[in-house]
Image 1 (cartoon, helix red, strand yellow):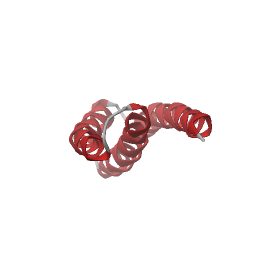
Image 2 (tube, rainbow, N blue to C red; image 1 turned 120 degrees about the vertical axis):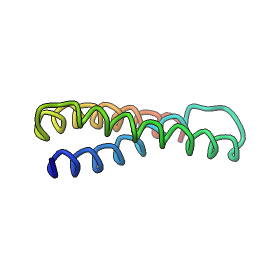
Image 3 (cartoon, rainbow, N blue to C red; image 1 turned 90 degrees about the vertical axis):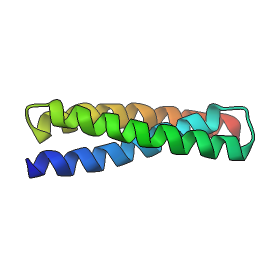
Length: 85
């Protein structure tokens, strides 16, 4: 159970940060609205990823899926970063 807990915490945190960064770059609103949306959605995403990790049979199976999502969201974030500068 502890490996699942550790992987759920770590992957949930990383994916929530990465996905909220993507939302922050896409939303065309003021900064205070972006921060509020990021705070509310970030916590929800973190909880969803943690629940997903707990539903897998092992921490390795959850880590493989979450790593794929992190790579995809990181590539999209890099694309958004370089297209805005």
